[in-house]
Length: 412
Image 1 (cartoon, rainbow, N blue to C red):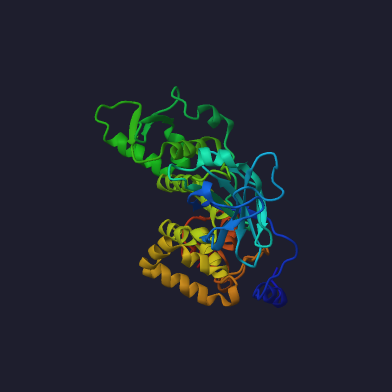
Image 2 (cartoon, helix red, strand yellow):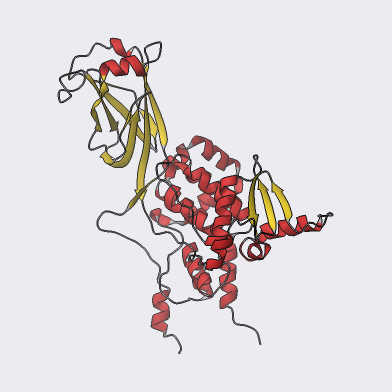
């Protein structure tokens, strides 16, 4: 049935604005640490209810300071002197954050609070004598560390279709009895067991590595041994578990190293040709770890690995809030060294007017025309490519060309 001109015109309408009502779901990004040094703490001459404020430190694009009552505020425990510590965001706009305040032997705080409008902390952080005796160094300096995570709006992120594996693969996962290849992984030489027929389908580059080893196996052993010393053991184990069972890696929001672990799994999946895991980890990096302060680093990462979705997400976040991106000095300096990528980012930002995304998320079921495809964001392209069974891994330019080729009429 021929599509009507009105229907076709509707599909080509361009989104010119968006608004929302209510509070969006949020996620908390990586931890940034601030340290406040209070010299000669024991001799600070303050009475109960008297406080002092530290100088400010910038974290997650905001200025923060501590408000400290050396002998407690008026609501503190009156039986023994306590130290009261409060964290204050100096901006005028509210910031939703999780902060953990810690000294050498004490740590408190994990819940989320709205800062700037309110000051949050602990009126009975610890007993004063305990702080002086156990947490001050030999020179009498008290160091207070604040571990800070700031909330960002949790957006809907495209994920690849879940992998459903046969129960038989569960039973042979890392099985020495049935394997026909042994991998010696990492600096400790940990052994993992695999099956060529499974790897040929689910991790093609790893399978190719096995074939290379086979061709150089002059002893003619049935069970090949492949040593890969420059791979993280945990990442490789996660890869094999995904290949055999389809189990997706999980991340604990309180683990400081989760972002690096996610990158390590991604790199391992990319290296050994496990596209499904690579795509999943790309989406995880966006959903769980992308915040303004690491935009520059993840943009460089995305560009080096042809991650269209992550690259677009970092550029969109730069458009929304470029200041903390630029203030991530080391990563921004590295980005400036990559001249072509910096130019691409600035052109992208210029093309997106008034803080809007450059490309549109098209959620209708229509395929659109070849001309329409130029307006599609990466999610819209991947959804359509996935639906018709085409590749969804690669740069936006590659995905766009795949989709246009699919739409072009076949010459008779």
